[in-house]
Image (cartoon, rainbow, N blue to C red; front, side, top):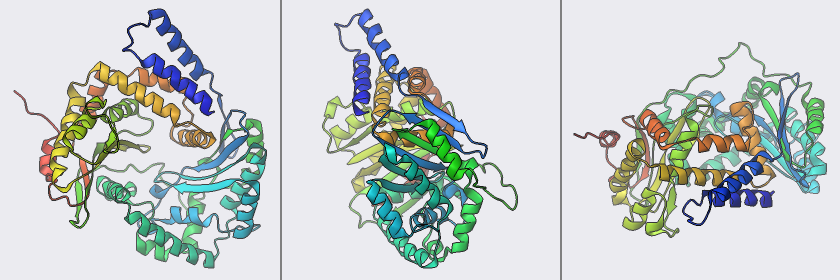
Length: 477
């Protein structure tokens, strides 16, 4: 798998090297054709839908290992103020024993297979997956079905896990990047489900009961919200049979009354600052409302995000950095590090930048960021866009290295798009982006729009919100 991706990446770099003066038009056409052929010849992603509504999606690469998992269309966005944190709590409880397996039996069974069982919760999805040898796929799926449908949710296990989650919350609070992004969501989507944290508030974790967990599973887990994804040495027909066998009789979700399909989460331009001068560096995130997963503007916003790039002091480059912002940061020491981001949800998103800087550099770096944003809206060139597109394509291909990464890509895309976008189609959509498209999305999402700001640490030097807002447009004669 890694060899195949490196071959694609090599072809992509050759195709992208437009500074070479010795290549002929014929060679260009040949290299471009070889890249397209390599992308088209990737193993197909096969999709089937069972009568119960459960979708099965897989890519068979013939690998001796495989990753299979259950992607569930439910996360902290499905919670309310009273039970915020229950989705993540349920993720923890799934591994604490079932009706037929104790926690020790479960751990020994996974260990004896040489497999890895894991899970995570996001704002819109919950995922349980297993990495194993290809011949152990049936056993892995049986275990996944068992922990999803038959978790005991014992009172003693709940109390023990309550302490584990509270310790996890303390660890997260020491990661200032996580803290800043939680604050960013809280102020950007205040009063809506996306504004709540995934872990939930401490008082909720201390009070969540078995009844809360059972109610959450009843209302949010069920075949219509499930995607069984597989990658590596997996046979699609076998996955379909296993899905029918282990999930075919499962019912749900069950409701007392039919809920709305998706409650829109209102974006509010605003700010939150937590000033703490005992912290050595300022941690700041500034963003605007972006596009949802399926929005046509998402691809140009991804290219714009790549144009902003990322940088930290451990990198060299100086004058040779591709990104204007990285060059300025390296030359003038404006920050310790920064990274742009494009966080997407079903109907909205956050597009922006997170940076870490010395206390008295907040203002200078913020102004530099805003100048670069406005340049995206008005004067970014075709050459810069072409380079960003090639960087984006290379990064996306290299991220698909290994069965777990591919399985994650399949499961997420099935929930977001109800299909997996083929690599050659994704490449064509990225290639179609022009400088004018970047200008257009910049004007639509960035120029003269209200930003959202979250800052933690010694942030006295950060401009006040009115000044940041006034930096979102130019007044020129």
